[in-house]
Length: 189
Image (cartoon, rainbow, N blue to C red):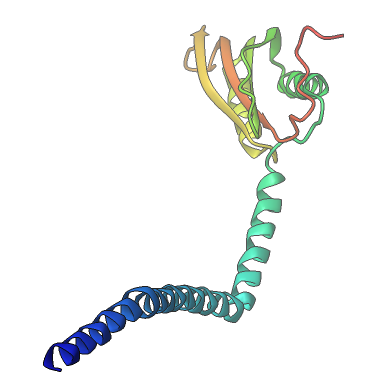
């Protein structure tokens, strides 16, 4: 009888272990996985609620950025065609040189850097008086569009006590264009 009772106890223990291994452990693991998912979703919900609470601040910041972007875009040229952009710019620059009594001897386009904002480089050779060149520098700095003089080489001659002399020079002018969607090469057309 004692062996039979030990056998029954052993069967009960084996059944309990089987129930624990194949039923309770998987249920416990599933509950842990569900708990981890719930915690992750709770974190995402908390972050989303923070973003929703900050929506007015985000909208104000977006509005300020859009205004700043619009004001900065006004500094750049916005021509869809690179050839039209180059022609317009060359006419403006030559006109500005002529207004200051400087003679443009050569105007050529150097390599362009194409990206979201196209960077064009113009090489300009000119001659005139040093006083007129100084006025040109001031007017170039006052232009509403962004122009950068990256390099200049100047030869000043005949300067004395009464005169600033004459100048022969070369400029490397860098200008920026926003609309480079129609990327025409200078060899087209």
